[in-house]
Picture (cartoon, one colour):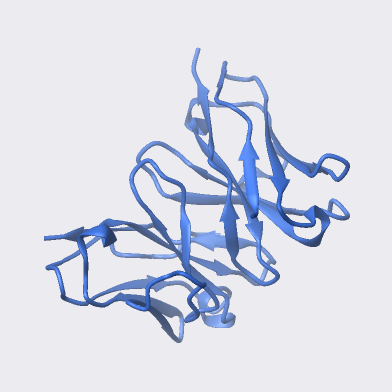
Length: 110
Length: 118
């Protein structure tokens, strides 16, 4: 199972919106609405920010939103803030009843 | 509150085995599955496998099949991940993560650093 493909880095200025893509196949991203996203600050563990493509857990800012089209899922961060600078990983359930993470995207706030 | 507390850092020689523990509290341990995820230094997250806590059913990533064993002890609400025939590229932080009722990981352990070096 190959990792899902994400851009290595995305940057934006405070207040701007950015979008991170996550491309898989019909056996994972495209086959199920079970894409989740995780935020990881340096030296910390991952934190769930989006589940089931577009749902936010309680306590997660509504500046984070998710969507999916075909084999590609996307995470959008609107109103970018300094605290959003972190690594972001997508994850999908697969047809083998396994899971696969994306390659990860480093978000830089300019 | 849900907590997953992992065992401490390990230093192992190549060819050895390591067993990492993950003690759960704040929920009914047998109600959820757990996954193990690792992260090599400066690298991304890598899913290793899952275990259903109440019956021990497992599913491992193909990359680790034959080298990893995941188990649970329901009497102590603890999950274990054993990795054998360690190599230097197994050096990583290993996390346990609780599956929600659905297909995502809602709580994570603090991570356990495993260093493989001669």
